[in-house]
Amino acid sequence: MKEVPDIIAPNLIILFIGYNPGVRSAMTGHHFAGYSNRFWKLLYESKLTPHLIRPEEDQTILQYGFGITNIVARPSRTAAEITSREYGLGREILQKKLAVYKPAIACYAGIGVYKEFSGMKNTSCGLQLKGVVDNVMDFVVPSPSGLNRMVFSEQLYFYLELHKLANKPV
Image (cartoon, rainbow, N blue to C red; front, side):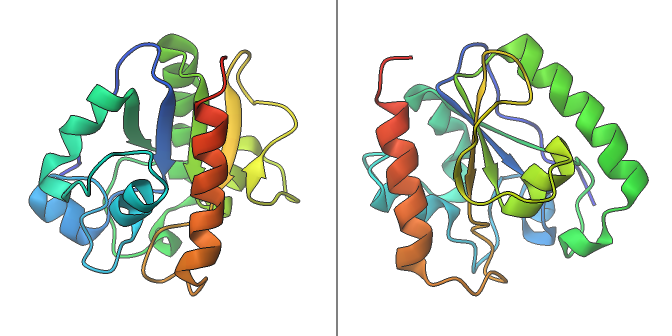
């Protein structure tokens, strides 16, 4: 399976960080492309984007000051397939991306993504007390994967909170 290229630029408002691309994302070359993935709907419903973006249009999020990367680049069927070695390498690469690109907010699309990156075992969704990389706020939203059983309205709450944070002067 092919890797899905980052959508990234310097000084973004939000850099969304997933586990790794799923099978459909690898097949299409676009982020959050799984049929049951709610990422794009959550961005729209939270008013982070003014219209519903389709996965094929993922590059357009740059115009809103947003980007997308993953802690691990290798696609897989589930995040459970990611090895500890891959997470270790991914942590180093992600730390460098955050230091170089300097987004205002690093938004982790899943508590597990943030735990793997930060090494913090006890964390919850929302703004974290301290960012892992200096001058970058860490915010965690629930995984938008269709495998996540959290109801949509509960997931949306955290995207609405992210929207509020993103609209504050940094």
